Length: 288
Image (cartoon, rainbow, N blue to C red; front, side):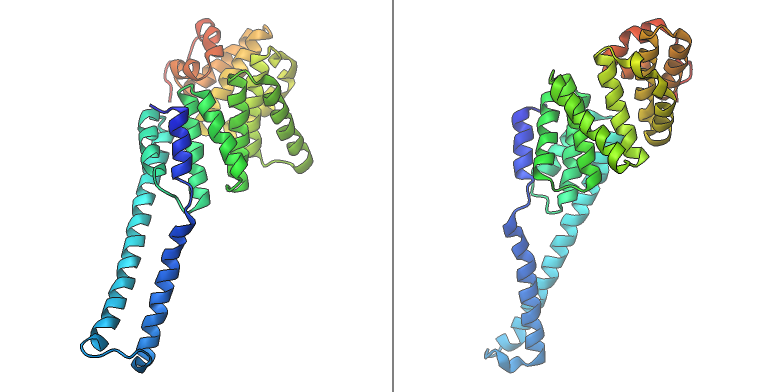
């Protein structure tokens, strides 16, 4: 089971080690040595039979280091594929187990490590371990080693985790900053969809969702075009907003669309605020 202590250990053990970069320097040195030897064996005074054997040993060392590097890279790539498949299928227990294996060793590629930490944060959120998710997202943002998309995803995840841990003021402030960044820089629609989903959750939690129903159509479009099956969560939250605004027809339509993509039990498990909506409106008979 994932704990905040375990998450902290994985963050530490997965950090790149500067010393591991020495392997490349060793490899370069060996290649230079071999090249110099081939060019002029008199540069190194070595008696028989070493004059024949040393170049072969150097060549074998270079080949061995290349093979080891290729093996480790293939192993990491295979584990990454398994991790992201588990996340996509929402097999959170398996995802956490795989992530613990991968993150228990240093990961030299900063963006690959960042993506794995984001996956760990998503798994913690799905298992309602919001304090752990918050810690992971804060670490990603403090380190700042991800690409702009990864850092944006971390900010959105942090805002949702803060909403769940009762840090409402901080979450609202972060979401407002994300909204201002959208107005000033014009976030691409896929990033805007993430922000709108968490903003809608905030409005539902604070009882303010009915005040922004004029944006419901735009939100539906963003969810439909950019969140894939996760759009179902957005539709479910829209159903809650319409329900609280006493617009049952719109609420029923949104709930039907939500349950076409995600089963009602999964919707309520992720967002307990939807329990009343699930009890009040019929769900789709044949979910995807």
